[in-house]
Image (cartoon, rainbow, N blue to C red):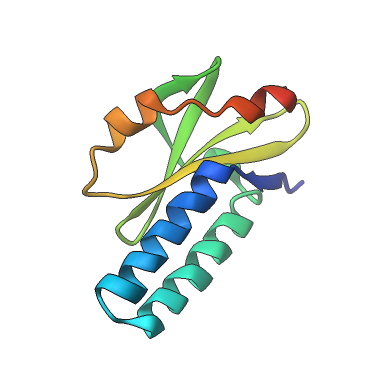
Length: 114
């Protein structure tokens, strides 16, 4: 059974920041559009086999944060088996200090879904 996938505002902001950087700063609209399309596809497919991807070693409100790699990007998410939902928390570039960023991540609106 496939899980529903929800993306947090923080993860959406991450995607838009990454795409904007490629589009504006690197002046490569084609690559920016391709990245947006591919990340969207990766996120949408996360509900098919959510346990397939690695444990990041970080917990969020008692949930294990999983880490899916796509090219040079890391997609962080938690799984709520009770309501069969995957919550995408952040999408970061792999060269970023992701462990520090994830430990400081505070996604307030997820408390409404528990």
